[in-house]
Length: 146
Length: 367
Image 1: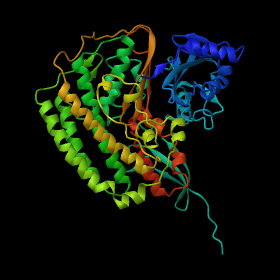
Image 2: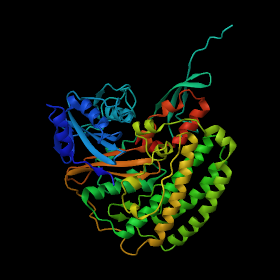
Image 3: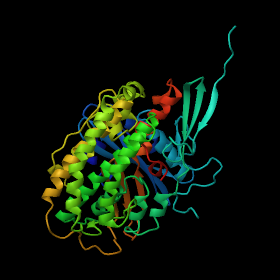
Image 4: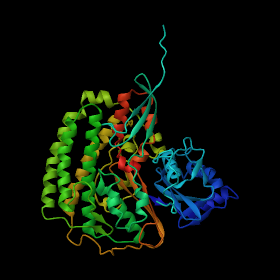
């Protein structure tokens, strides 16, 4: 069985190691501020005992006031999983890209950019994935009119 | 005299016999050698994730059929598991067995196509492909028996399956399992030590273990690179922990290893089927579930080992009758991430072979 790690423990660990990052917990998911996302993700990936070497999936959810981006991490070595979330506003949706840590983010971040309209800074090839380049709008948003 | 050369850009696809659907490879060539490759897709994008937001939880099932249209049963399975997890719906014992039987039959059918089309891409034009289709037809007959459909089954439901097994199903399955062993031997005699296949596929399109993990590869592609990772074992869902089976792995992650892993997996599926049909209990085949399922507010992720890899559904419920968000973790899409690195420096015909060995389904890539 893949054990889902207790998010509160991880959040405490992150808050202790990175003072001022202000990590919260909700529904057994660690919620990280987008400014410190990259450094905390690096910590989760390289720290012995955590070793989250596999990024299963990234997805974005539109909550009207804000976007929530969910990262599902798996450590193949310890067979453990962790849900990490981050949030960004709808006016200027920009998040740091995690492609430098996990290349599995490559196509998925492009897909989120395409359908949800969140730009990932630092992504090597931030273009639309499934829709054509001239397409206007981001159809996965809740307020997109068909 | 030196000859001045320049790189040549060629579009392979979107309509090309080796692209397994509508997929375009924008290949930059230096003579015959691929120096760069950019995959272009989206031709089959139907917006299934968006469509799911305006259907009821039951109404999404036919959409999942159309994700990986070569493995509809497994897609149904993955989605139903997610809904059950979200709405806490129990599944009766008999339904669990029926689901495992269907999922493994589907794995057989999907791998038959993957292996067959891979050999097609290797240049064994349509001979092995039609051998594989002969057996796949038998499996499809079984699916037709239970669901009335040949390709898009719409068979599983949250809480069970839509119909019980008909009387003639188990004898037909027994007969198929008996014959499959002979068929598998036929493939092995024809292909396993085939010199031409070895020359074409061994050492070509290598995906290292670390790279496979980093790009989020799963299924046969990951296992061929030497990583023993199968959701059925590492995070058992349904009743997979009751069956005995092994996880075949490859050594170096080349095209030949990916082909071998698929063939070995078919043998393991046969093992699971042997065990499953003998133990299938009597009893109800589904739980009574209301037409409009209203799961409590929350979110969940359920994943299964589909023929192409880890298929996951991320469902968010706002307490209404339709999913607030339904994200599909598509293994075919993830497995494509490293294609560029795998084909760089190889000849153009190796590109076709490497692409064939990943065995993607465009319905799942584009969604």
